[in-house]
Each structure stands twice: as C-alpha cells, then as structure tokens.
Length: 529
Ligand SMILES: Cc1cc2nc3c(=O)[nH]c(=O)nc-3n(C[C@H](O)[C@H](O)[C@H](O)COP(=O)(O)OP(=O)(O)OC[C@H]3O[C@@H](n4cnc5c(N)ncnc54)[C@H](O)[C@@H]3O)c2cc1C
Image (cartoon, rainbow, N blue to C red; front, side, top):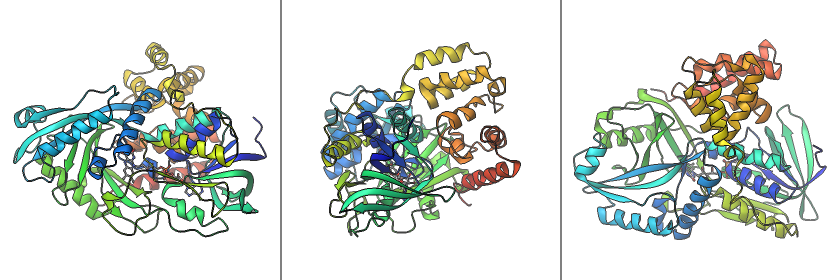
C-alpha cells in the first residue's frame, strides 16, 4: 500500500479513543495516521475496571444523559464485538447503616432499567437476606438486609478491543505507527500543518497533516505544550488502582458492587480471567504519568474492604497476584470531591491554539465509539469535507466475523485442545481461524506452549505478522494476554522469546535483552509484601 505524503488527520494516542476515532475516520474515507509513543493500549485504557457499563453511580450525580449514552453504547458493543464484550451479573448487597439504603438502590435500579429500555439483558431483581445468602454463602451476614442484582457487561481484555479498532482502521487505509512519540505540533499561518515525531530508534520524522486529534488521555496537556501557543490546563486526573487475586474462600459467583465502610465509595469485586479484579480507588493525582503504581495505602484499603464483605477470604497482601494503577483523564477541576467530577467526555476544538486541532478530554471505554463518531463529525466541519455517514454502529469489528466457522475448524484440529479453542475464540474471535491456518501450514507452530494446553505457538507468529506486536511485552501483555494469567504467563516467557526471536531475526543478545525487559515489566505489577 502506498503511504500518502500528507494525511488529512494525525491521531496522537492509540488508546481506546484514538483507536476508535481512527477506525471511524478511515471508514469515512479520511487519510489517517495514528501515532503512539508506546505500544497501542499502553495507557489508561489498559488499567480500567474493564466494564462496559451504564455507570450506575453516575445516577447519584444526575448524569442521566451519560448513563443513557453508556447503556446505548453497551448494546452496540455487544453487537459489534460479541467475542470481547460479555454480559456480567452484578450484585449490590445492602447492609444496615450504609449510606445507600434499600429504597435508594431500588430506585437506582428502576432508573437504570428505564434508561436501557431497549436492552437485550434481563432486568434487575431484588433479593431478601436469605435469598442472597443462599446464592452467595460467603457474603457477610452481620447487618445484611438483602441485595439488588442487575446486568452490565465486561470487556475482559480492553487491549483487544483497542487492537481490533486499529486493525479495522488499518484495513480501511489508516497508517499505524507505534513507538512513535510526537514531540511537536507544527503550524503554518495559525493552522496545523505537520507533526514531528521520534521513533524507537531515535530517528526523527515529520508528517504533513491538515488536522490533529490529541487523544492522549492524561497526557493531553503535555502534548498541547508542544504546539506553538500555550493553553490553559484541560485535564486533572484522579488515580485509580486495582488488585488482582486468585479465587478465595467464600468468593462470590457474581460480580459485587459494594459500598466501602472506610469512605462510603462504591467499589467492585469482579470475576475476571479466572481471578478477581478488585477496585478501584479515586484520588486526585498530579505526579508523573509514567510508571504509576498502586500505593500500599490503596492496596490495604482494597484488601480490608474485600475481607469485610467476604470474611472467609482473609486476604493478605501476599495473596495479590498483581496490581495495576493509572490516571483517569478527567476534565480539570481545582476543587471538589473526586467522585463528583463529570465522567462525560469533552471534544475540545483548540482553535485558539491552532486551527485544525482537537483534544479529547475524558471519555470511558464504554462510550469510545460514540465519542469517535462525534469527533469525526467535528473533523468533517474543520476540514470542510462532506463525509459519508458514520458506519461504526453496525459494522462488526474484525474478530466478530466468522466466529462459528472458526469454532468448527478449531474443533476439527486434533492438536488444539478444547481449552485452547475456547481461549483462542475469546481472544481473536473469528480471526482464530487465521491463527489455526498458520499452525496447519507450519508444524513448528502447531505445538502447545504450556502443559495445560491453552497457548498455541502459532499465536506468536500471528500477532507479530498480523497485529504489529513489536516487543515481547506487546506479545505477552497486549496481544496473547498471557501476562494477566495468575502467574503472569511467566512459565511461557522463554518459549515465547524463542519464537519471537525467529520471527524478528533477533540475535541471542537481543533476545536476552527483550526477555529482561519483559521480566522487568511483569515485576512492575507486583505488590511488595
Ligand atoms: C482506574 C480506572 C478505571 C476505569 N474503569 C472503567 C470502566 O470500567 N469502564 C469504562 O468504560 N471506563 C473506565 N475507565 C475510563 C477509561 O479507561 C479511560 O477514560 C479511557 O481508557 C481513556 O482512553 P484514552 O484513549 O483517552 O487514553 P489512553 O488509553 O490513556 O491513551 C492515550 C495514549 O496516548 C499515548 N501518548 C501519550 N503521549 C503521547 C505522545 N507525545 N505521542 C504519542 N502518543 C502519546 C499514550 O502512550 C497512550 O497510549 C477507567 C479509568 C480508570 C483510570
């Protein structure tokens, strides 16, 4: 494919918002280039609670349009990415003395059902004390009054959702450049004219563009500083951390949304990837945006609150498999409670800085598609172009095609275990058929990498050839998703490194160096006892 000398739009940041905008813009015929300073989905989009949800809590802040939009988008994502976005049943236990009593929760549930009137998921139900104890025997009995139960959705691996948006953008002609850090937005006569970036080898590049979308999440203000004119502050992040533990004594079947005793904030305990994802915290944050870690105080808070609700859990810091933390790119507000800052997105046209420049402030995983549609509509006006209608609402993401056929083909392949087949479908959807094809054409790639028979060697070649993975960390943490197994996929590291070395043509030294970086990265998720 010929790479154009000049692009209609450069999208800086390949998180969920940048990827979604790239897909929409490319599908509507714009010449698009996407740049990320790291791998795709290496920022906020990778550290969330992984829910595709209406945001029940936003009802408390009367963010009705946001809840409505989110519930609508939840339905849409279930349709266009059925392999990635799955229904999730959530229970809200009610304890005596809690800030939110049974009546308030019931009203919230009714409002949630009404706002998602055309939903495909079942409505809420209310359970009395005995009913919820029967369903969830590990739940604390003391002060328990009953529970509400409702459905939302979960994207187990948001990384794959982001990737599939980029793959769709690439198929529609977009140019994707990871490990490309934008250092300057250049202007001519007050309008965006070019972006200057540095690649992973330190080479400098300039690309001519007519518009720029700054979709860098918490880095939005940093990127704006690279434009010739200064601006006020737009993003004021709050930090959120999660801990991940293996199943514990008394662990719930369903996800739980619980009011913390310490501060009355609701937090989630969610069955995720054969483990439990517990979070989040919400703390104003003004420090470095690189290598953010869950603090000991946050970890202790989440452990203590989980033990309070599920007393047999008796979790300690040593039970944590790993933890992750990041910053919500929320609109900047000098004061006020963190939880009250709006979760609505703002598509900021920065015409005072440069014509043709847009910044994305906020935005949830759940609403990325709609945000992208609105952004491309804005771009059309800025570029004075009549673009076709948005198609992302109904066009399936690449892995959502051919799932049944891929399932049949996997079942017929004698070297693929049932576990591997289920895993492959949940990661690659219908594209698992292409992974299988690689394995059938090359016997070296038809091996299983682990004794449990879950990982297929062909995946490594596939994600390098087809999904622009450029390092072992990309492969393990953002493509095969082995990095989020309870052992972080560590037993697989040497075999993956050997396969990647063959694909990339690495020397032994290069392979060792990559392996070291991967181990350091995996270690960075560990919580010190
Ligand atoms: C703790 C927590 C829990 C959350 N839970 C949920 C949830 O359950 N459901 C939900 O819907 N939403 C949730 N969210 C919100 C959601 O995750 C984020 O708002 C969303 O992922 C933001 O995506 P983004 O693409 O704007 O930013 P990011 O994902 O941060 O992407 C920005 C990208 O820009 C790149 N970048 C930065 N500077 C440069 C540069 N100079 N050049 C090139 N690239 C650059 C970064 O490398 C990064 O990849 C949660 C957020 C947090 C923090």
